[in-house]
Amino acid sequence: MAQCEVCGNEYYLAFQVVTAGVTHTFDCFECAIHKLAPICGTCGCKILGHGIEANDTFYCCAHCAHAQGARAIVDNAAHVQVS
Ligand SMILES: [Zn+2]
Ligand SMILES: [Zn+2]
Image (cartoon, rainbow, N blue to C red; front, side, top):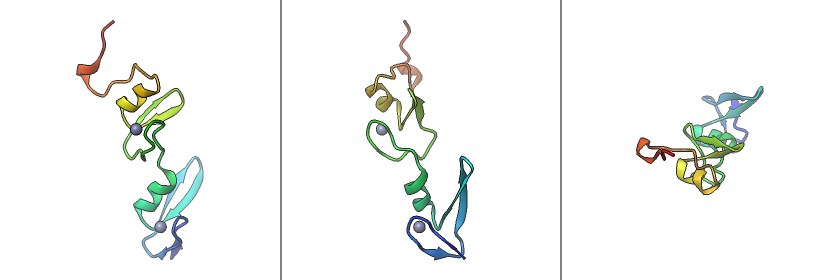
C-alpha cells in the first residue's frame, strides 16, 4: 500500500512518477495532474499534452503563446505567415 501525496488516499494501485529525479506517489492520474502538470502562462489551464514552450514559459496552444508575444508559434500550417 502506498499513500497519495495529494489527497492522502492509501491505495493498492498507487503508482510513482519520477520528475527531475524526484519520485512522487499518486493514487490516480487526476492527483498526478494536479501536482505535476505545467500550467498555461496565459489562460492557466493544466497542460496535459505536449503543450508549447516559448520564452521559458509553457502554453496550452498557439493562441495562448501568441497572446504573450510568441508570434512564431503555429498550430496549423494554414496559419504560417510567410514573410
Ligand atoms: Zn490522490
Ligand atoms: Zn492557454
